[in-house]
Image 1 (cartoon, one colour):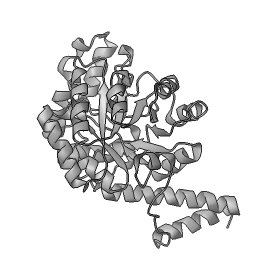
Image 2 (cartoon, helix red, strand yellow):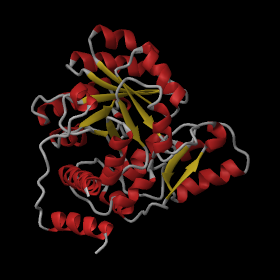
Image 3 (tube, helix red, strand yellow):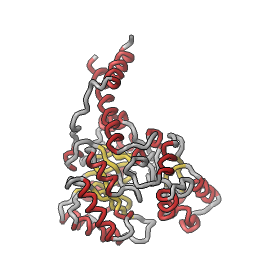
Image 4 (tube, one colour):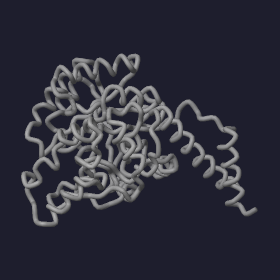
Length: 351
């Protein structure tokens, strides 16, 4: 048996006989910053990252972020925060604050930041525009700020603004990777030459081997979304989740790049209609009408299960999401895969 085969055999044996228990924690600068056990972050997913899903991620040892814009009212948002606190047993959880150049009302983000602070939240994921308008209130309350962006220059700018950590996503990210054309790991390698704050990498990550690779590269955590879209706790119709389970790594596409607002989604009928309009020359959001409406996606796909309608944000890591299961099961599998990959590297290094 050659060395590679011998190493694979040793690892396979460890998996099949469960001879290598998963440790209770995997310390990094990010776990220390956030007070979590594993460097696994569930990024804020519009309409989907509610109290149940986020609490499940926190209980599993990672961190999740309730999306502030997903609530219909300030009262509903406050209730989500209170529910999450109850479900986590008082453990810390995060809130996503997205400042958008496309959405008309960014004032609602400031309102919901105030509510979150009133409810005791002190961990925030900011995204979209630079968080300049949010930082005074965040700093006044000694909150932890993780800014998500797609370009190294934006990550450096956020670091210079004084954020506590940065999430950098690559072109593989489901949702809005911006105009970035670099893949996740290349993006991260360049960023690590310029950043001194903790870094989380996101985009196309759905397997523990990739988590091990990101940590070996120098990242302090990973951000995932697509792999959790069919979790039991995700507030979406079962038919939508079955569509996710049936989608492989080739089942996503990007649209709206010509508007400078690239959107990676499941390649469904709706996405193909958007692509056709774009190819025909549409260059204003109004020309796409209801096809790109978030409220329509929520009503038709997530609530009713009509998965051929709506812009269903998704990255190619969806290929690793093969069945509906709990967040705890997904996280446990990722942890086992991460530790198996680490042991394989250590085995090869020591032989």
